[in-house]
Length: 321
Image (cartoon, rainbow, N blue to C red; front, side, top):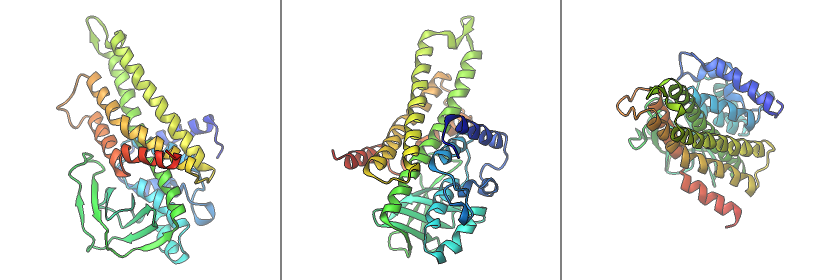
């Protein structure tokens, strides 16, 4: 696909139309019918052959729609399986592409955090030791992560230390996919924030105080501008990182760009959504209001692939600081 803003806007509009009013927000199979689980898989392997730039747009729209499926893990696992040894690829890749199996993707560790960890069949981990695939038998412990707040797309802890795994990719490929994963997760948070911000602006235009709309007050306008600036900065750094990754380069500069995007969004998104809550009059007791779901989503995203601090450390390391 062409990489100009007009094409990306058309893609964004088409994705939003599909997701608006859609019923089963937890169905990865529905997304597979749109070929969205194979966005990063070459066409000769059954995928769409797209790049991180377009995939980032889809990730943002899924975050905006509060999609609760395992799409994030599936699209990255499919990309990892596309370059896996033939036997493993032939076993699992078709199931990723048609949505009949579900996967999680996480940074390597003895215990990893995965969204919707109760529903996945396989787990792909990315780290300095390469890409590893775990088939999640009942013997591998899984437990709900009580520290993270998302109830629609709950985070689970999976203990894989000592569990059998298959090495399906090199450390260099793992670095590349982990960089893509950070950008996609950041785009998801941006989408959730964008939905919150749009709703807030509509509310402030209609809510009347002292005979005029709240949005007419200068103090409120200044706070809205700060939120608009965050949205513009976040989208700019995410798109810049995605375009760098689209070239297939895995240099230190590109890894640092993806980490910088993740660090910026992970550090700022929760506070930005909370600011929207305050400008909405608090609404602290209406936990089923969409804004609360968006707040919990961006908070959880800030911990699934490390934290803002760990990404800043990676930026420093890859930049030679």
